Image 1: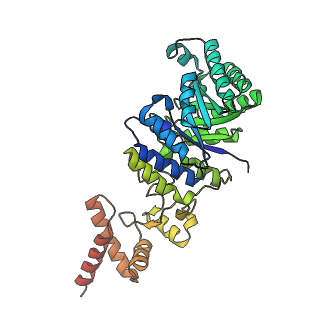
Image 2: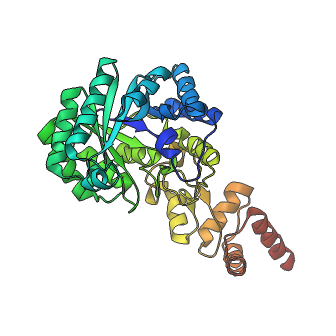
Image 3: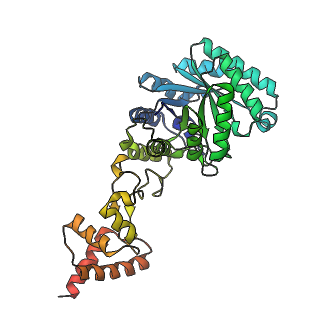
Length: 376
């Protein structure tokens, strides 16, 4: 059990999802929800954009939340001044560290990157800010240069280094190796900022924690550039149940928060989404449903109420008689005989194949009523 800081960037990196825009009212609501969940630091936006963005950051600061409020900036003093004007207590100072970014995006040199970062960090430190220096594209950076970058950042006053797997090319084994090396050689606190291009954002974030990272960057529902970021709900629940690190989050509100962000972002929450999807505790397969009815632990890693969901017994092609009987007893108070359940199952399977889906409750009732009428 050691303290880990969860840094949520739904309002910054999450909104950078192609086509997503939050209204200022939605931003305030999301900030409140994140704070109520237990998020330690909220990256609220990019103040230098001005207009609604700057107003939203200022308004979030005025909410007086328990969470630290961070503004994102390039390694440019005018950016940091814009964040300071909003009243944030922390700043992220971001600049690329990989040669491909330095040469082709910034069109400059490694030495110039160091100089820009140190100048911006020194300024922010003089202003009393908590500072995260973000090494963009760290996962494709030369390790010796990244170590030098981290040491210079620490010397200039940075509180942590954000290790960005900007294009999501890491695997958990490489992540562990890189983060362990970086921490051993610099002693700086490291934040994991992982993207999901190969579907490993959460796994890579956890690997970084195993290697000694003290901060984890996340977004609700894994929103973010391209394939998105490590999902808040996945990281917190995996830390709690797999790494035995309980951060005392109000996890029972995860579904509520995920559904709100899904609506605000216009991005559907898939039924199969890990942790918060509606199928997480939906059992149709006869063997699975039977096991879950006898003892939910047979097919559930945690309780549905832990995240704000409910267990569902779904009746369809793959159901068994135990599911049919349990469904009717629990939901309709009707105790079904074995022979009735067998016949019912045959009718259910036939209709499910015709309809190419599981059946609605009303359809089950109609099938049952038709079956009784035919036996009179």
